Image (cartoon, rainbow, N blue to C red; front, side, top):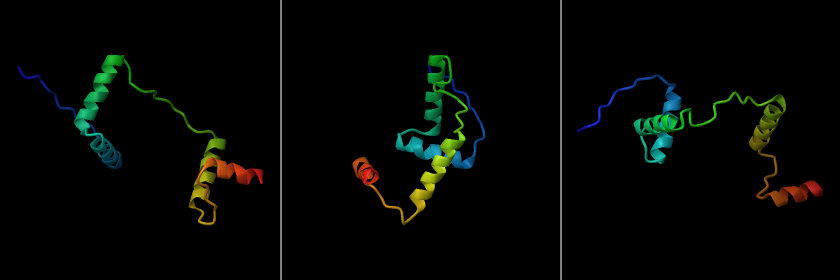
Length: 92
């Protein structure tokens, strides 16, 4: 006997859907399968199967991220290919 199925319809941002479709395709899944995995895991654990938090970065972290982005986009910045090389430069 075939299992009964039900349709679920929801709206999401088009870019989020595109990114999710691409990720799931890389994993060999489609959106329906990924959503079913999420639902089954939620039921199995009796909760959302990951932490949902409001981890907003503080001002220091935001400043560091902005600085890192500026350095990454600066063509004059010297690249380092490993930690030891960067540490050696700091010590000199």
